[in-house]
Length: 369
Image 1 (spheres, rainbow, N blue to C red):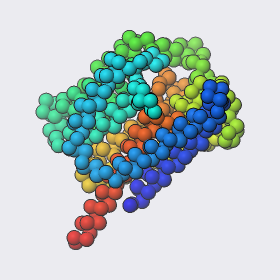
Image 2: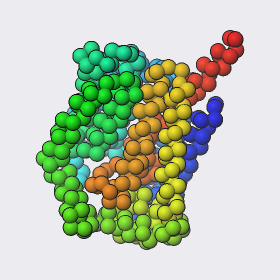
Image 3: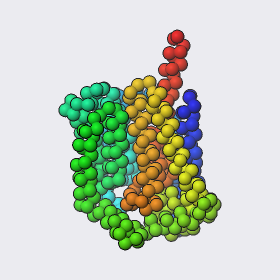
Image 4: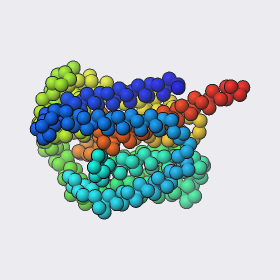
């Protein structure tokens, strides 16, 4: 196991441990008020953490080259699940995003992100230079991007749809797609995205309250207002772990999508900046692993999965600080567990496997020499 892989594993384990601590401190009061137990949500989070670590270990040993055989089938299946979710899943907070499995609220869009990245990496490796030709190459991956991001978009889940599209186009660009083709799709996509955000009541209200806050200088919503209070209360060094006041039912979803604000309150400005820099460092490590990968498939796979993690982290931080409209994007590895933490762990497992296979190939070549 090379140094990059060891550092990556250490970073992720550290994030997961920090997340467990933050969920414990942020969820206690709410757990007691609703479930008559300070530890109810924390225990729920813990078993998902165990599942996430288990999946990370499994995928770190499952040879990533096997994905070439099943990526298309997996993508078709997750598209079918997305259609099922849109047609039959109950609405929660104005959106149809979750399937209740009893033990877990499964969010198919999180799985779709990972599976699409895998299939794009497979396709682009096979295409090679044909990707530069719109008809012979570019339009084929574009078809799958439009299908997946479109189905997520109409849930409505605009933010995740945007992450899917942006991550996909980054992979296409790195793989060698022509910039004129990418820009030719991005420009009309922005128009469609903007129009769609105004059509859906759920997203329209979030966008309009954000615009109104910019014009009038008010707060976007109660969550962002309380999140800013939490961040401000933390000061430079924070109030200390377990001493958050905003988690005492002042800040809704303090243990979930807005846990970054509790982190800021308890660990201060230095703590939040340190965590964000560690996410940047994690992505840098992913780039090193990608560069050393033994094939183009592994390179694109690591790049896409790593980019998905860091863009999710920074979008969440931007939401909490009020820089962009409120979304349902979680803070990777740290927010209250569920589909998100498990799929991010799967992503890390795949990246680790690419790194491990690279080491094995290098050692084999050296032995042959």
